Length: 146
Image 1 (cartoon, rainbow, N blue to C red):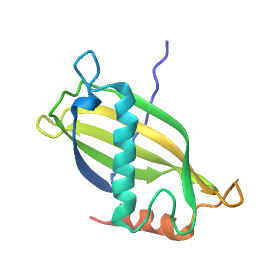
Image 2 (tube, rainbow, N blue to C red):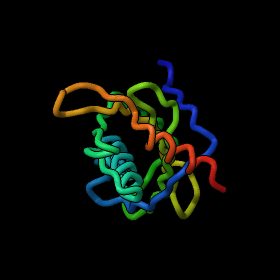
Image 3 (spheres, rainbow, N blue to C red):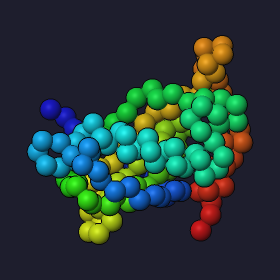
Image 4 (tube, helix red, strand yellow):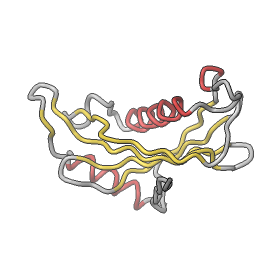
């Protein structure tokens, strides 16, 4: 079986710490695969909130997830604190990709990397919308810092 390959961009523009809760742990005693996307979503929500956005309102548009890929690198355990980094790339007319890297804060070991395809959406018209130009400009500004 061929493996999913995720090519991470060079620069991440946001980072947050997320402690692993007991509900994130599966019967094998480590981070469950079902929790990884929730951790990525929490990171995305924190990122958006920092700039006054939400998943329901980015310059008047909402976002929906079109696809997701996760590549597990190592195990995470109850009580570990993950440093989850995020960046946005691959802009298209109606969407972009959010990339994530989750590492154990103590050891630095990467636990998982991932990518979610995001489309911009108008719930009133029930149609896709263009990526807001102000959002693209924000991402470009953040990538050009430091």
